[in-house]
Length: 291
Image (cartoon, rainbow, N blue to C red; front, side):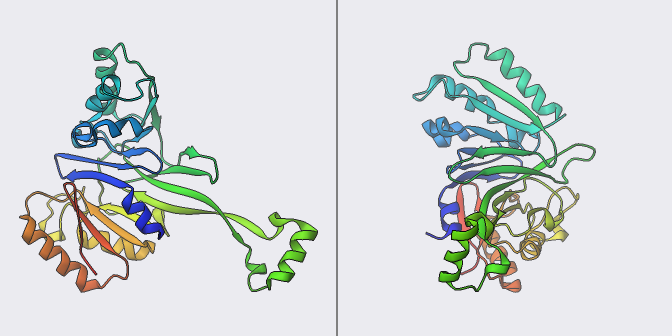
């Protein structure tokens, strides 16, 4: 199975601008944002979530946290498995929610851990057979406050440039003499980039990502009043410049009738003829906008 297909098949979520946004990536058991409706839609699958990564404290991105906590405390599943929630340090809305949950749910059966984080931090997910971790990067959504995006990164190995093109027998001899580590080097591959709500940002923050998840609240700049969200046109441009292998757009404004939206979005995508798949998520449904 191709890497893109594997990522897409293991990504579940729901996004409707101003109402709710959340995405569960089953492979690593992580949740990006936590808008309302998580427990209703995922049901007992919420017990698979180990870590929650919040981009910012607006209600449509954190409103599902109380339901998630209470479901894990009372439904049919492992009620002792710890849950960690990572959020931008100093986000007072998340901290208010944390205080509410701590006061209203004093007898949790599991450890609920809150982690304030900053730009450039790394959070390890797994170490075997390959190291995987999330690395935060800055976004532009709330003036004067930290908002975060997340890169899911896998540490890999490859043949050093000076040994590429050497025949297999000669490589075997080098390995016998100096070891496999001598001819290989470690590098980091971004598997998935989740940007959250933001105005356009520098594409170098997720350069070479396999799958770019970028908000597109509006289709074009003419429909946008304030520069705190992005457009489909901008998301496409950033996917090109970052050399992403696939683009997922979400957080679409509900001002657009669905049939008109898909038609117009498809036209916008076709005008730039991307070589990568472009997928739009409307609530829980995925629409591929190009062939």
